[in-house]
Length: 599
Image (tube, rainbow, N blue to C red):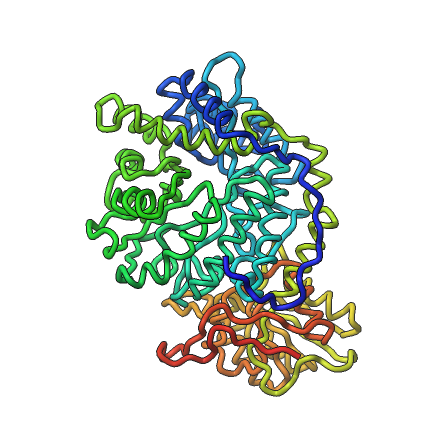
């Protein structure tokens, strides 16, 4: 991996070795365990190993009445443990909406309960679970406080530090492992070259393929060597150049083969070279790679031909969620899992009807469409990952140790140090920043988030430095709210306004009202600082924003870094990892990759 020039001095946080670190084992031992385990598994158990899905409930055996009802409707049984047992599941995916992620003690206890269900000693062929979640950090993170809340990928791209990317992945992976989650669906290896991308955006490290490749490799090493969890590079063969969300439609990537090799392929090659154990597919059509019109998830040409044979990847290929519209657009739900396996996938993620998908794969084997040998190939890969993680020897976690580890002082110190490298000052035309003096009245308004409360965090930071501060959340504001905010701004010395995807001007999209809010605040004639807490592209749609910064995220640490920088206690070090073009003319560059001010 090329050496990146860090934006600031080298990181100094030193982390202790993870308590659950496993010693290296020779390939012969891995082969022996995998072969022996596979030999004792029935066909039904093997097929179950291919599936990973959500379950409802915070406790494996005793979910709430509502979660029992939800499990019964989705899976035909009432408890998470029964879902694991009925379908011989290979994996479970945690979400807040399925009530799996309440607090550290609960998550670790749930993991142990699910592992106990998977390892029922009354039967042969039992295998520990691979528990997963989407922990990209930034705008996609599942772990609740007090976990380490790092900035996401594009913020790391702004820092341009492989060391920072590695550290963020290492700490994240260790905290996940502590609660029994061994497969974070990260890093995102997509190159976000389309500013209108509705689904990737700040989840990507940026628009430069070399930068994305370097930081992808750094995070693979941080997750796998640094934390002992299974990194998942996504979304192959590259989801960065689309204006369609694969959750709701089937995107088509128009790159030529040469463009794909130059833009999209390098990050996945880098991940493989770094030794990654798993790669996730994309529900996208790439005619230059496969003219059939099939999404990559169902394409033998892409998964077997390109990823396996051309790239030489021998690890686990996991599909993106099979309940997404992009993979369901062309074939029925019973065909999708079978076609994904025929294409070369190993792990089938979240089918919309698990019983239907499970039975369809079993029937395909019995009918001869899929051979048991083909099933065995995928199960071997999955078992190998579980062995290398130490799940065959230590499937359970120490709950008390997890409580002590997650959100520990050294982890939070790492969060602060990484976040300080990411803040990007894009525009400071009047030289307003850094702020001088402390005797001022400040209005903090704009977009807010209930879980993180960036408005409140930012206002608190100003108050702590002597300002008289008013908080006025105005998330996707109405005309009345805009008028009220402008009236307040006229009575304050300074306004700081947060925006989130203000560029999204789709017909009827309420996020466009953020543009009107900024215009109204600027029209007061009072100083206004605009802060993009997600996509940096917003500046192209806010011509009156003469003082503009990008945090790429709204975590507490990001707001703390912002307050310090606004007051001159910290010099901004971030540089744009994407190009910002004019809203009315994409051929006109407003701010190139690498742009960034400091003071």
